Structures are given as structure tokens and as C-alpha cells.
Length: 129
Image (cartoon, rainbow, N blue to C red; front, side, top):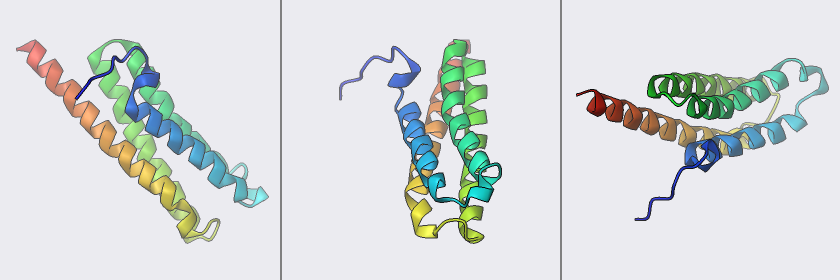
């Protein structure tokens, strides 16, 4: 299997998946009631943007500890986003079937984040030996 070089945070598969998720969430919230523009719409959009932004920010810190820290913040924002999506479906702001794609993307991004965090921590631990 060929490994491609990572020259930018944009080359990271986890960043790409999180970006897909953010775009999906912006699209989802277009159908929300207008009175939710400053409520749930804002919460969903901010948390989805936070996931992708924290992956990029951590990458830019150029220190493993700071990178892992920002990836963990991204994980927290991902769980916040999932909660907002589930709540939106439960209170009838959007059909539950409509959030399915976003939930799948979120699950994939979460697995990728956990894997990247583990690899970075393992590499740091190995380096410190």
C-alpha cells in the first residue's frame, strides 16, 4: 500500500471527512425553521465547524502534545454535534432519516480521530523511551 505525503492538514483523511460532515450539516440546517437560526442551526453549524477547525489548528501547532489536545477538543465537538442532531430529530426540527448521513460521517470521523490520537500518542511514547 502506498503512503502519500502529508504536506498540509488538508491532506489528512480525518480533516477531509470532518469537512464533508460540516458541509452536510450546513446543508441539513437549511430546512430548519427560521426561528431556529440563532438556536439549533447556530449550534449545529458551530460545532461542525469546530471539529474541522480543531483538526487543522492542532496540525499547525507542530507539537505532538498540542496536536493531541486539539484532536481531543475536536472529539468533544463531534459529540456535541451528534447530540444537537439527535435532539433536533427528537423534537421534530428535522426528520430522523435526514440526519442519518451526518451521523455516519460523524461516526467515521470519530473513529479516525481516535486512531490518529492513538498513533500520535504511541509515537510520542516510543520517542520518549
